[in-house]
Length: 106
Image 1 (tube, rainbow, N blue to C red):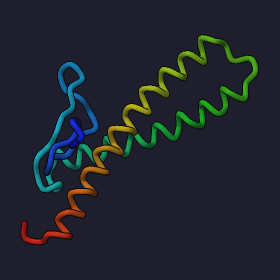
Image 2 (image 1 turned 180 degrees about the horizontal axis):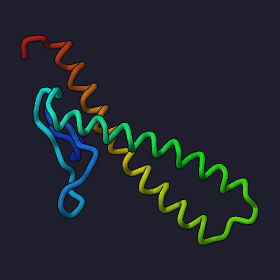
Image 3 (image 1 turned 135 degrees about the vertical axis):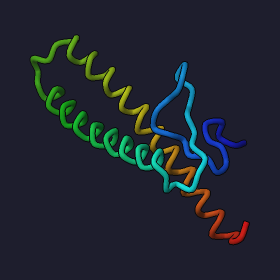
């Protein structure tokens, strides 16, 4: 069964539209929106790394309050959602490239 969050030949973008619905881009991957999406993905992944460092510090701090921990867990959830979207998008594009390599000219 196909993933309802991807479509053949379309790129899942690293942001959502109205009501949190996924946004897709159809194209060759070389245009302006593709470059913006690449930059947004890069920022999201970099922020996830920074957040992990902050979480490690906070978990090592025995004086961390429940409010601080709840806050960082909320940010982790947001970050995980973004990283998951990037992974789905990149995985779908890799699968498309693999199919095209197996069936050139289609």
